[in-house]
Image 1 (tube, rainbow, N blue to C red):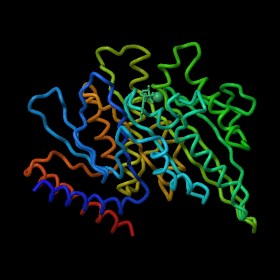
Image 2: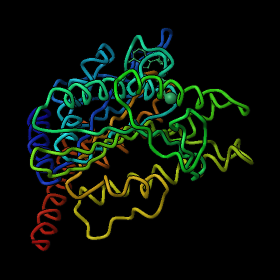
Image 3: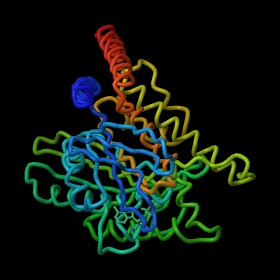
Image 4: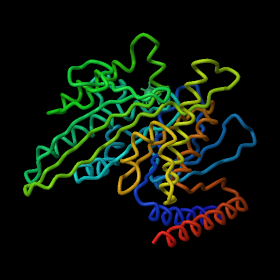
Length: 363
Ligand code: ADP
Ligand code: MG
């Protein structure tokens, strides 16, 4: 019964996936810290993941389904390979947003900037590999001429800070974009941006997990007959998604937490609204979604990379991340109990019907 239910769920998932178009969700689990017991029971090569709380004797298993789930032995290259075609589509005029979501310590910066968090050029993340790739394409294509510019922005407490500029200074509002000629230009720029992000007067190292960091690559292309295309790739290292205990947080910390909670839930609302093809998309509710508005929706492509800390102690946050990721990708598979499953499938069928109706009324 369990396998049949799983299969049926997967079929529904694929159906929903087709309807939702340009939104994909991947999950990445980082290696387990020694001394801990894992909350990850199973990772399927179909993108499914099963988790449970190892501290509970009578534990309930939960299954989630994503487009892909990367286990703890997945390399940076393997992750990049799966995002490459999406990233390359920027050169064909598509806007692309890639978000790294997850609690602090779950590996967001590792994925985007590499193990050293962008401070060394030895081991790369999605950001560097993407830029290298785009430069390679721009120099190899004879039918097109490209102009590539990058910008690094941080959103902290709903305020936008520009982190890089042409002359390497910090926080110059009118120095918005840096033209770059080579991957090493970009590398230097990113090192600079990361250094600004992780050092400074007010324990910025902690602050980096409480701000959203956005690397934007602007690509202008011109073909032989003079037709121009203009598109953006946004690579976003989101603020830590962990809930702050209200009784503990006061003052600045509470304010930060409220801004983060609000902006992450706004992002979830926007992506969910896009996935459901709602007529109203609530972009205006946060700086992050306002800033990315032109690159979210329409024919833009969105990828959510949900990051998981596998330790049992992180189970509550893990579940919350999986639920967030599932919400933006619609389908939740629930617990492997025959009754519960049939309920879930009923709910899914209702969702499919609702979506079908919504689509039908749109045309
Ligand atoms: P976040 O940005 O989500 O707060 P980090 O990227 O800083 O998390 O990762 C926390 C720690 O775990 C770092 O020491 C990082 O090097 C390590 N880490 C994260 N992901 C991986 C991975 N896939 N493989 C090995 N180490 C990882
Ligand atoms: Mg980080």
